[in-house]
Amino acid sequence: AVFQSFSIGSNIWVSKWSDDTEMFVNGTLDTVKRDTYVGVYGALGIGQALSFFCDLAPQLGCWLAARQMHLVMLRGVMRASLTFFDTTPTGRIISRFAKDVDVLDTSLPQQISDCVYCSFEVIATLVVISYSTPIFIAVIVPIGVLYYFIQRFYVATSRQLKRLESVSRSPI
Image (cartoon, rainbow, N blue to C red; front, side, top):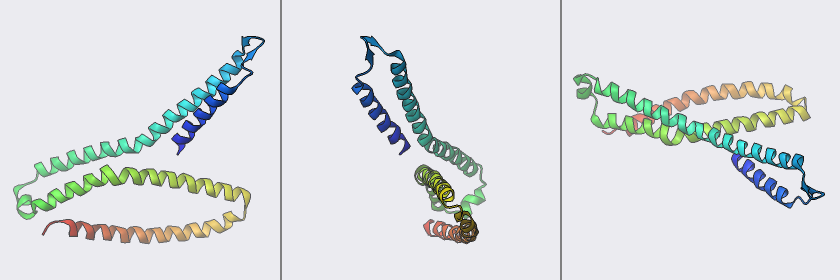
């Protein structure tokens, strides 16, 4: 969304720049105006580049984490004793590799981006509401405490469900 905003902004700016009929004053180029147009256009371009790299950072981080995790898991399995392979079915080992790497490759980058986006949206909304209605601050604190306790219960339950899912995914 931010990248698109910079992109649209730069297109609008170029359109405004090309429609400016006052660029030439008395037959000479107004360098102050030109420098302003170039500066704003350059800033919008830098904003696009920064936005792109900020969007790319979670993807790159998850790719590096998946690569490192796979190496650590592979090293652990390769150095395991023979009794580990006697007691652990091969399907369970493969399932574990596949599921963990899949989460880091597909699910986690999107979840990180969604979390960051949602956090900024919530913070911006709370700031605007608190600024316009100061009494809101007195109401949001107890709601925040209640939300914290509900979240603690949810995390524990979610962890148990993930364990059950992992057990059910391993082959019989």
